[in-house]
Image 1 (cartoon, rainbow, N blue to C red):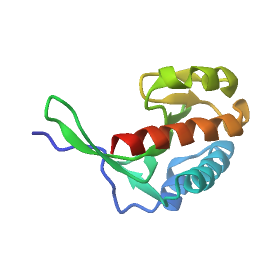
Image 2 (image 1 turned 120 degrees about the vertical axis):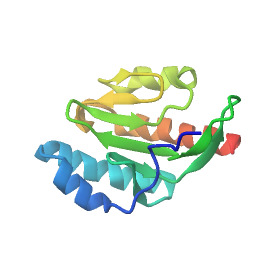
Image 3 (image 1 turned 90 degrees about the vertical axis):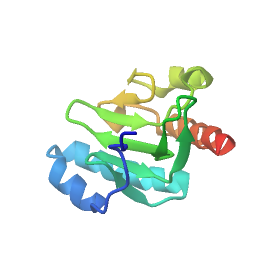
Image 4 (image 1 turned 180 degrees about the vertical axis):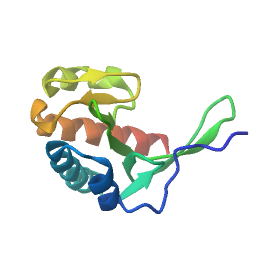
Length: 138
């Protein structure tokens, strides 16, 4: 079975942000997300793969037999937008997503250009719901 590409690494999170993110606003938003997600999750930030900043972890196993570990909540400061890995079941978050602000969504993440585009209190609720959902699965 193939090894997961997204695993915890020894890369320093602060060094990653300072070296990878070249936009000053995105850098400031990255450090703010680290502070907030650490507070909400209760876990220190760790690098998962080359570009994902994750908090905590859980083990998953699909019916296909594929299994691995993933961060409970995470983000990546991509060039176009932040990828927020926080939605475990988007249908449970519909009301909150309607209040979040300016974003795009995919199956497992929310894309946000900058933190000022969204309501941080709503983001906290979505993160907390995601953490609870994963806690119930583990």
